[in-house]
Length: 423
Image (cartoon, rainbow, N blue to C red):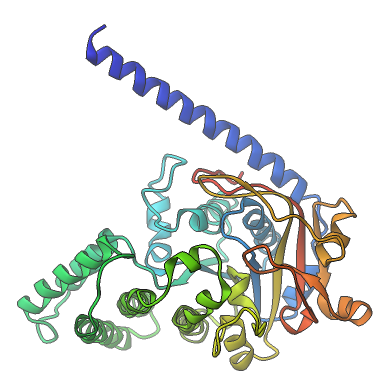
């Protein structure tokens, strides 16, 4: 058989397998959404409507079900004519361009468009598809993560800067030097050696770029162009954050982080600092004050404190603790807890075995797929109890209303995947 024919058969088989896999995925999502839609979310929606900001915090990023529940909550609010700004622990650059990109998407496979695929596919891509399908105009979507891992993103930002009148700010040699350094590091984000001298050079350049766009925003105040320029400037701020992150990460034991060692993870305080800087910047400077804000983030970041001295590194301040200082009384935080089922992106694995005398153990007996508990009420009768809201297998005993305001318990979760369709 000719080689060309063999290659054609191989490609056809691979394509067929992909399409069948996608169709099966769509059926699974529709079935799961049907169960989620049977949940009476009114008690939680009442809490959300009582505050300007609500944090919805999943234990793991690699479970599909928490994102589908978040989508359902947003769907309910939009249907009730609430105006929503949905702020996602995802790449700020790519969420800024999400509207333009999604207009041209014809395939379910969105990995070409998003670096944080598993976050975007559920909390971003699907919500925007929902808004377009139902003609909702009252949804804004923002990322607040500073990771700009994709060299394409950096090149696009540099091209935008070159197209603007930047001669008073940057020399041609300076632009060429910084492009070479930025692209080199973004191509090797986890292993490249980053000197403090290079970090200073990047800081100097990105600060000037941010100032350039801020000046443009001031000249175009009260227009859509002002928002455009503000966000563009912030992306340059995020580029510096990204490289400062790489520099700090190089000091840590990556094997311990991979194994979910809290002490090593909480040494990595710079991530929570930068996430909060971007989140508070969006809340204070970009999002219209009339909009209700939902924040999608992991529970380790969202906790109002993390003081389990056996596991935590001294001085760790999670995003939630910083939020409670600046926005005291303005927000309601919800930890999303998995029950039985699985997690995983590429390799699927079973969830942690449920501890019988934990909150999860008690709620698991009820058999309902989605349950909401207000922790202030629960703690009045239960005091301290076991719960496992943070990544890893540990059940920790605490008075949990000091850490979160509420809990969504999912009786069964499914593993996340790189290809998904919401409706």
